[in-house]
Image 1 (cartoon, rainbow, N blue to C red):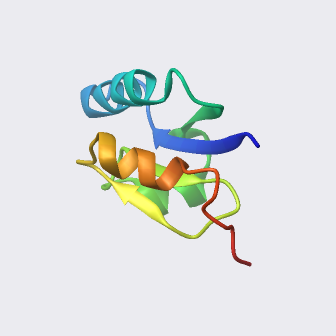
Image 2 (cartoon, one colour; image 1 turned 60 degrees about the vertical axis):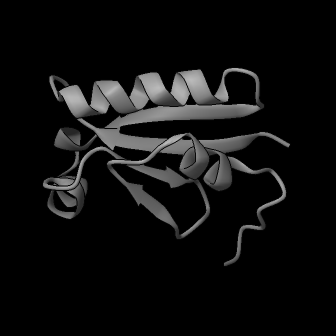
Length: 86
């Protein structure tokens, strides 16, 4: 089962770059895809996340990780056995 994560951020955000690097290091050996979403492209996302980026979210889930997050936080969010509840 592949887990899909969204990393909300924007171009030129050094914290977003740090988060992307941390995700790459943490998840390189796992079946996880990460899509980087530029919040500037969407007014609703900009309003919601503008002062909190980077934010990591599991697709289909409700939980979000606000920066700063670490390896353990990422691994818990990305666990395949974590049920998505809707």
